Structure formats: structure tokens, C-alpha cells
Length: 388
Image: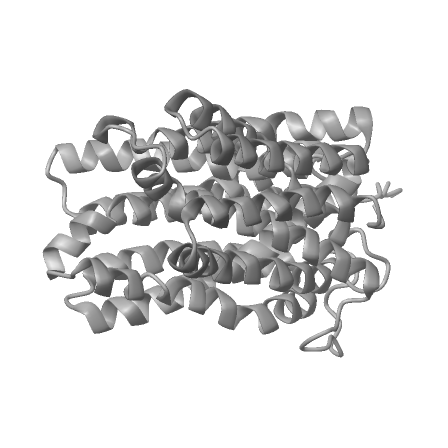
């Protein structure tokens, strides 16, 4: 009897499926973070935390992120981004639920440190996945992934407003979102890339000093993330003390910035493909500097809002495009390159806002924002020297 043996053919998901799955993971991460942020005032009230103590408490998550920076790239390089991102985002969701369970300040601080640690671990892994998908498409698509993260921020804020309005406790809110995130991870798990270039090596170093090109990319991210941090932490204060906006308009600058930052990320890839990464980053720096200077020199409500709109467009593309360029490094695996660049960049996000406050204490907020505008211009100058 003649037996015909056919070769076993294992089909792989097309690149569009990989892109959709990684996009879902970015969205789920953004939703998790925005869910926590939307309930901070409620938790502050529940635990009776003063504004001063709350400011110190909120440093716990960034410190957790900072603690993960030396090990995140190493872990992804050894285990592969698929394992780390799936486990990490599930852990992120469970960490969110743990924050809702915290009965007092001390457990909440411990939970926030862990929350920040898992957040950055997942961030390095999901960006490593994004770099791999971008290589399959052979064009820049990184900014659109980060745009989904920003879009999730709006969704999380809207859901938080609904939950607060209907008297839903933070714990029930967090359990609901955590369940959605875990289901989303499970549905995406079969459609993300199983392997990364240069991963799975048993001799992956714990920490790698970035070479000159990666260091320059890190400084680019540093300048951009200082500008982002200024908008996140100081936009409302600027509108209240410098613009002298009425109470209903104090948040207008932050809203304007967030809208154009999210929208800009969905057009940044097209712009970079059309005009090149270098030109895109140069224009981004100019927009950032111009927007900040407009708000400083003409601190009226319309001009300040317009300035913050320009800043949002300016910073929207810098970090995604820099991460994409770092992931294409030929000197080390993508995860280690991303970790090295994000370490330098994250320092700007962590220390930038306090620096603004210190400078403002000795001078004024307008002087602080002028210095940030100079850093925006530095993005343009550094982009001309970066290896892109």
C-alpha cells in the first residue's frame, strides 16, 4: 500500500495580524494606566491623604519604573519579548486591582512601586514587539502604536468619569478593567511574534553602555520627555498663575496638548515615511520650541492654548521614532538598545518637572518654560547629528 506523506505546513499570521495584536497590547497598557490615574482623587479622599503627601506618594510609581530599567532589557533579551509582555501586562492588570485593595498609605506605596516596575518591564517588551512588526512592514509604524496608548488614555479617563459619576468604588472599577485587560491579552497572545532578533541568549549582559549613536538617541528622548513632563505636571499651574485663566479653563492647556499629542502620533508615521525621520524630528523640535515660546511671550488664553497645541504636535513623534531607531541598532539586541535609550530618556521625565519647580521658585514659571523651549530646540539640533 502506497502512503502519500504531505509536508506539514505551519501558517504564520500575516504582518497585519501582528500589527493589530501589538496595537491591542499598547491600548491595554494605556487603559490600565489611565484607569489608575482617573481614580487618584477618589483614593486620596478615601485614605485622607493631604496634597503634600500625595505628591510624595505619586513618586512611588516612577521610582518603581526606574528600578526596572537595569533588568528590563536583560530579561527581554533572555526570555523574548512575547513571554515578558504577556506576563507583564497580566501582572500590570493584577497590580491595578492590588491598588484598589490597599487599605492604607504604606500598602499603596508598595503597590505603586510594583505597579511602576511592571509597567516599564511591559513597556520595553511591547516596544520590542513593535520594533519587530515595524521591520516586517519595512516602514515607520511605531508612532501609531504609541497613538493607541494615548487614545486609551482618553478612553480610560472617560470610563473613570462614568464610574465616579455612578458611585462605583475604585476596587470594582479596577477589577472590571483588569478583567478586560486579561481577556484582551489572552485573545492577542496567539497573534504576536514568537521570537525577536538576538533574544534567547543565555549570555545576555545585565546592563550595556549605549554607544555614541544610542546615547544621542537617548538625549533626544531626554529632551522630549522633559517637555512632556512639563505639560503633564505644570500645564494647569501655568494656566492658573501665568495665563490667569478662569477656573473652567485651567485644564484647557493640558487638554489641547493631549489632543494634538494623540492625533500627531497617528500621522507621524506617514510624515516620517514621506519626508524622512530626520526631517520629522527636526520639525518636531521646532514646533515644541515655538509652542512654548508662544505661551511664554504671549500668555493670553487663546495664544497659550495655541502654543500648547503646537507642543503636543511637536513631542508626539519624538519618543516613538527614537525608539524605532534604537530598535534597529546593529550593536545589540532590540530590547537592550531600547532599555539603554529609555533609561536616558526617562531621567528627563523623572527629574524635569521638579527642576521646573526649582527654577520657578528662584525666578518664575515663564523662565522655566523658556528653558524647556530651548530643550525643544535642542531636539532639532540633535536630530541633525543622530544616526537615523
